[in-house]
Length: 292
Image (cartoon, rainbow, N blue to C red; front, side, top):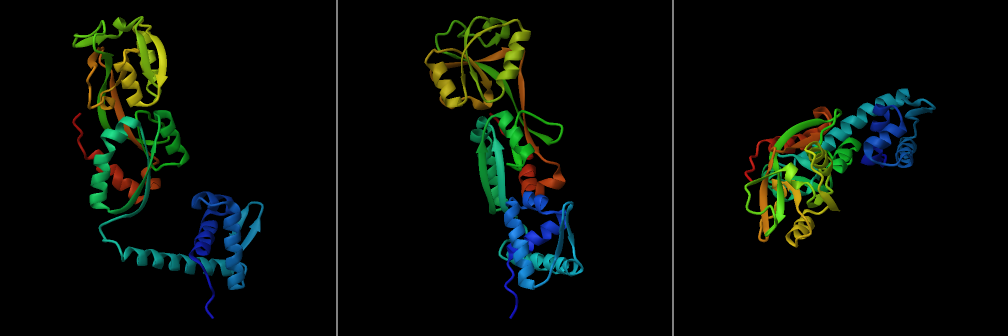
C-alpha cells in the first residue's frame, strides 16, 4: 500500500532541509518547532527511513533524505500546479497582510483594493490599522507584508504613494477664524489637541523650532474623535488633509505657514522577499492618483 504521506510533512521536511534546521524552518512556516519536528519524524516513520541527521549545529540530509528531498520538491510543485489549474493563469492567489494608518485606510486603500480585486480576485486581504511607528514595526517583524505610513527605515524599501499638507483645524468662532492661513508662531499659547498616530513628534518639533508653545491638552488616537473635540471648542489641532472629515460643519481649515508636507510611503521588505502578491499590490498602489 502506498505510504500515507501528507503535504504538511513534505513541506516541513523540505523547509528543514533547505533551512538547515528545525528552528529556522519553524520560523519560515509560522509553526512551532515542536510541530515541525513531529511532522518530519512522522514522515520518517511512514517511509521507514531516516531522512535527517540531527545535531547541535542543525540537521543534515542522509543519502536517503537527499533522494527524498528531490521527490518532495517535485510532489509539492505538482500540487501547486494543480491548484493553479482552478485560477485564471493571469491572476494571483494568496493572502496579503497590509498595515495602514487611519487616514489612508479610509481614503486611499479602498481604491487600491478595488483595483487589486479586479485584476486578482483570488487574493484575500487582512488589514491591520495602526499608528505610523506600529506599522513600521509590523513590516520589520514580518507581521504584515506591506505597510502604508509616513515613516521610513534603512532596512525597508519605501515607495512614495501619496502626498498631502498638514493643516490647522479650528472650531467656528475661534480667534483665528476667517484667515486663509496661520503661522506656527500664532499658535503659541493656544489650546491644542494632537493626534497620537505618530506624527505628533514632528509637529511638536516644528512648533518648538518656530518658538511656538501651544498648550497641548489631549492626545487623541482616533481622527473622528479628534475632529469632534475640535468642533466642540476643546482646542484646535493640526492634521494631514487626508484625515479631514467629509462633514466640516462647525470647523474651519487653515493652511500652515510655513507649509508642512507629508509623504505616505508603501513600505516592504526588499522585493526578492516580498512575493508576487505583495509585488502586485505595490505596483497597483503606485499607479493610482488620489485627488483630495
